[in-house]
Image (spheres, helix red, strand yellow):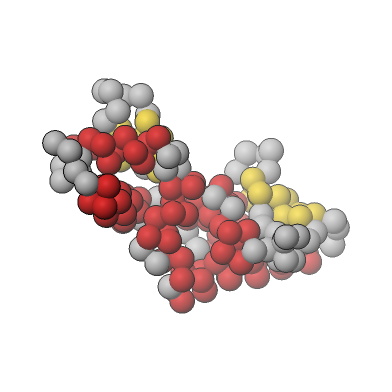
Length: 168
C-alpha cells in the first residue's frame, strides 16, 4: 500500500516517538526494537528510518530487529519535545555539574572517571548517561564541550574545557 508523503512523515514521527518510549532509559545499543511489536507502521516507514540512519538493522530475520541510533535518539527527543522538558534539561544539567566536579577533584587538564560514578554523582541512570554521551547530547542541547567515552572500558573522558561554549 502506498501512502502520501505527508502521511509518511507523520508516521515516521509517530514511530520515532513509540520507539523512544520503548527504549526509555535503556542503553540504545542493547535495546532491541522488534518490528512485530509495532504492527501499525508501514514497511516503508521502517525503511526510511533505517535509510536515514535513525535505526540500525541488527541483521536478524531480514530487517525485523533494530536498535535506535544516537542520531535517531536525538531526533526522537526533538519530535517528542522531551529535549526541552524542564526535567530533561535539569537531568542533563546535573551531568554537566557532576563532570565539572570530577574535573575539579582531579586537578589536571582532564579527568577520567567511571561511567557509573558520574551517573551516581549526577543522579541519572547509567544507561541514559551512556546514551547522552554517545549522542553528544551536551554539545547538541547546550552547545558546550561535552564528555566522551574513554578508551578504558566503562570510563568517560572529561576534557578541561567541559561546559565551555563550542566554537561556531
